[in-house]
Length: 273
Ligand SMILES: [Mn+2]
Image (tube, rainbow, N blue to C red):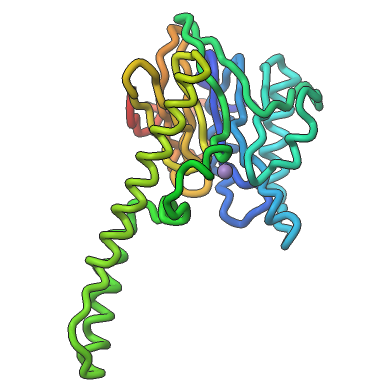
């Protein structure tokens, strides 16, 4: 089963896959890993959802395949670091331990091709500093559309019941604004941590919101997630960072002379350079 040649990067950062939960988009990640490779891979936390594993076990073959694929990359020479997150904090007790060529750590310093030092950390350690309601950050882009729909339904219902008008959407807008604030304060806090650690930037996950931004003299990078947005961050061989989105699984091209030519292998939306 020889697939297409993967695009190779210097480094790849992946977080918040939540294997073990139904929400994990394992098929997308397998396909992404099939088409992308890197010399160094950082798994930036919440790869396995340990909380959920304890409650109800959801571990289909595809979740196994993700693990196998990563172990295979390690066997083939990729240097892989597993940074523990809050959902897989069981890994924190194995700091410095190697398994299958993968080393476990709580945080790491990554040096880019252009000589910058970046702190790699999941980010949950700063939840106590960020006091906003965390769940709001998970509302995502659909929040507003959903709010408008619910608003119409609520309005109709309240009208039928003879109740005065009450705007669900304006209530929701306030909530969404708080979510935006949450993301903002998380980014600020993590950037401050980078500054405090005397590094040039931070690469984290946790809030499921991919970003590459500058906060003064430090760079804030978030890998996003594989629960909803299906994003990863890659470092090019010149040190340039990029967010890749892998929103759908590519069809398998049958081998043979009549196979359709894959015009553009890469169907990814570049969010930031
Ligand atoms: Mn997390």
